Length: 207
Image (cartoon, rainbow, N blue to C red):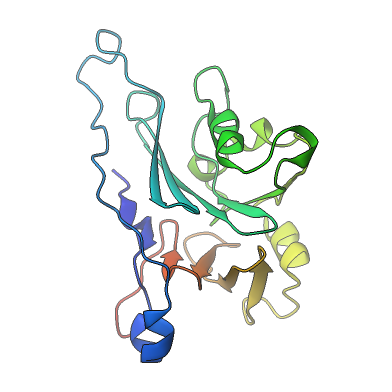
């Protein structure tokens, strides 16, 4: 089972100056994630869980009774726009109300709803199957997970070299190419919290 350490908490903090570490916005991963059931039909479970790491950072997980992959997704909210990392394993909004849940977490109503960028760590289906739920929503930009779109959107001219940045308004997220598990695999480092979102990618401490 894929576990929450698709997020490597505080990755790379040893390279930050003490003053930078002390300015990180704290949060909590103290959450009991639903383990599903032997008989999901007899014991219905909510399709998705949401944990507020802090008031501007959310961890979402699709339930094991909805998909054996039980993937995690992450919502980072800035002052000007928000970033959703991955869209999980279920396309049908009736089975998995991912878009409804995410949009409900964003500030604003109607036309004033905060804009959202939807990105992916990589293109395996359990990380992007929910894309259709977002593709026609106003104020939402979905960046497809294939290499051409990833290179174009983030302006990587010498793939896999370089570093891109997403400015969410008072919150900067670094985008790092990490191909190997998937040709267009990218990871995200949130300077606000010190969280590193890797999506099926891990790295020894020495790297």
